[in-house]
Length: 138
Image (cartoon, rainbow, N blue to C red; front, side, top):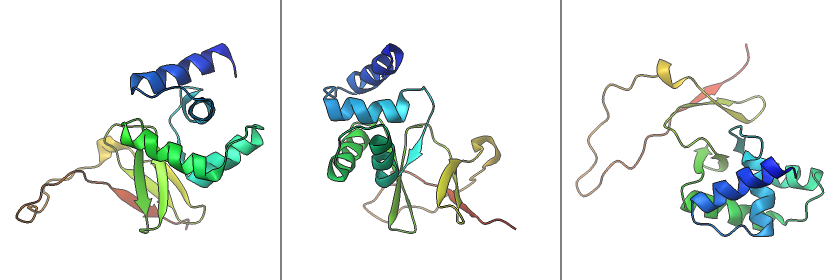
């Protein structure tokens, strides 16, 4: 890892109050080391770590992604109720889900307009609204 990748990763973790363990630093560098936002699955992040010759188990990847979500570094987007993607972009924005490649990408937020949401049932409040637009190639 270059000095800038290490610093960017350490800053990302410390900004959320997380201790920079070896596994967290390894995964953080793959997620934010180059300054770009990512949409990953646990499996794709595990594969990226393996490709980089980093020793980390799939269980550790899952646990670390959960910890990153718990402290607000990432958010989980569920597609089809079973496939989870993890997004480093914490701004409110919609997503495109590409059915043919099972990839999740950002959709242009400025083109989305939600005029009205239904009232939440008695005793509940709306926590968030996730917009996933499913695409298939023509």
